[in-house]
Image 1: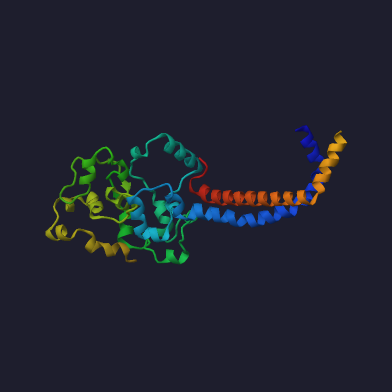
Image 2: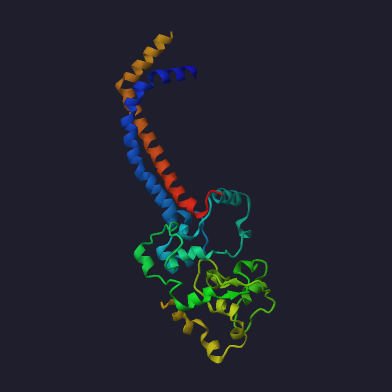
Length: 246
Length: 54
């Protein structure tokens, strides 16, 4: 070892000009595979889907509007330490027991669905600026804007322990079958995106609002729906107002 | 003894075969280091704005 250090000290000046051109050329060429590796891991859902086989979650994402223009990392954000935590959890716990309704913050949706988002730096999918221009913006569509400015006392979807109470999952938001034992928080809070797009009927990448989501807050209608409401539900009439810009 | 060793090493270093091998090695190291560095820089550039380190 001592001799090696001595040799290095003595011959390094002659080794540097010998190796430098090859190193520089190698580095220049290495940029391409480096970028390709990053692109594959960060921008290609195929990388995640190699291990994360979620069956219906994967299919519902692929078939949704999001499946065509987004990839996993557009929405699945996490700090660095969670990459380590996940490996530990996967190695030591049975993933079948990890069931919960995620609580998605408005900011995440707003990255694409508001006119002037706080930040779009997190978007990584094959989404172009032109694609963003054609999207329904929640601040410009009448009923989105109205709902998001209103308050509710209904608990956030994450509060429903669906994995512990299956009957709750089945009766959530059903017209005429509104659960009377749903506890409501006394504290009022602003309505968030997940109230309609991330509730119990919206499991696994299915973000379309359902009539069950409406019934969860519009209790009077849910308890005593008119004949018209019972036949057609909510969205058949009110859906356009969520999409047409003011 | 040490001088003889040095001479042998110098001869080896100067031989054409050795120089070519060293250059190929340097080239491979360059590719790997550069690819790894760029990947990490871009990865962190994407990850950190999301949730930070911790």
